[in-house]
Length: 132
Image (cartoon, rainbow, N blue to C red; front, side, top):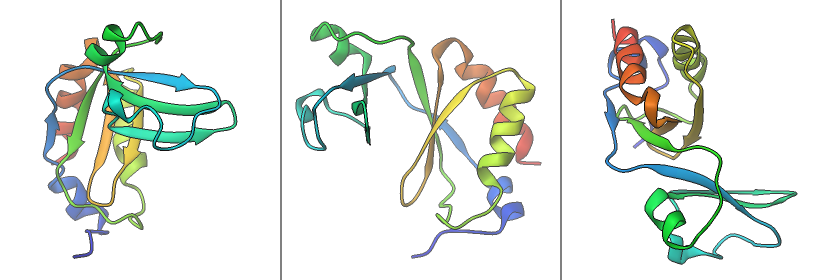
């Protein structure tokens, strides 16, 4: 099933959901995808500096891992196409209006926004303005 690519339809059915728990970004030099699976990452990206994992804060604390900020995850429940144009720009612009930073990860079905924990409720408010 292919995702929606019409921006107007995407925005009218964003349905953002705040996920329970908090997340942190940790990096591991000389690691590769699959390493540290015991930390239950929700996202992974390989960079020249190492493997960055987005993991539950509780897991990072349990293993004394360092991190800079704490985030909440907001999932846009609309099934967006990876080829959709303008969705990221629309929600990034709206969050910028609220002075909220967002780190975005896209899966095959949904976009996931990581916003600082203190901004999560305001981010939901901002995103609700996009639905018309």
